[in-house]
Image (tube, rainbow, N blue to C red; front, side, top):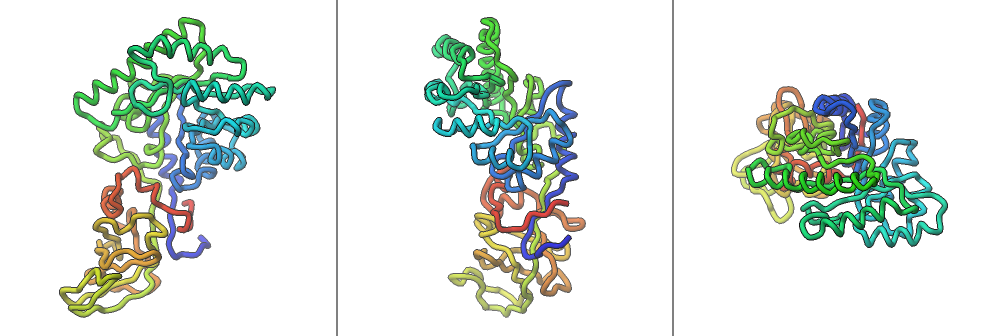
Length: 380
């Protein structure tokens, strides 16, 4: 492929498809998939991934964080439903209508503010009603003493001529954990969601697609599938093993590579890096890599390795904005221009998400979020 090979991210469409079909295997017939494409598709290119996934399933839906992300995907030519999971200032309701974007109702007061703006419009705004069943973030609190009030509020929303309700959902807080208390809390939230939706439906309210599962829930509690599942980390192959309680295999869709810019010998007692971060305790052979924390944020926060000639080579002397140094003493013949693997598989060995998370000092599922705009994105 013709691109400048300094630092780059290879995105595997084959692995993306593998993950999609693996998810489909977990779902009951007619259960829809909503692929989460927040943050430019976890920094893998939201428009490209949306088109690839839509080609696999014309009924797939997409979720994003905000209106800018939604418009970018829509302008990219994607026609499938797009749900904004967070808040959009009411004064931008015209953009939601113009680009046929579905908005989450994050609270009842928010619904009232949107209604004021929409009264001037001829179209109805597509919405998903968010119910807070115990996550404690956004949504209409709908359990215990708030149940009757929530039923009344959601009924008003459903009858409101400014809105077209196309879905209703909740977010469950404890799908990642496997202890008994967490499992019981997941069941409690699910029961709360079923209770209010059952009562709302019994009062002739149309709620559209019901959904409550995220990636971890899709794997760990398939009995809660309802009408649709929301999957992000599963699509990208980034669900940590510790949160994948059934051990179902998914494949990471990215490999991060860079070039070696210089190879040199370091004598015992020599320093490497700012503030003399590393002092060689013996003679070493080192390589300077053409990648830094402007390519992958927080890189160097923890202990890191890369693969050179399929040999794990430790990072020494810290990570700079554009470069970092690795010890290649055991890597055999190495020269400037050779390729190092920062994340992913080389031949027999792999720098996996757990190792990369240690290097970044973050959760495995957060690794994608630390890739910046700068490394070239290459679709394989």
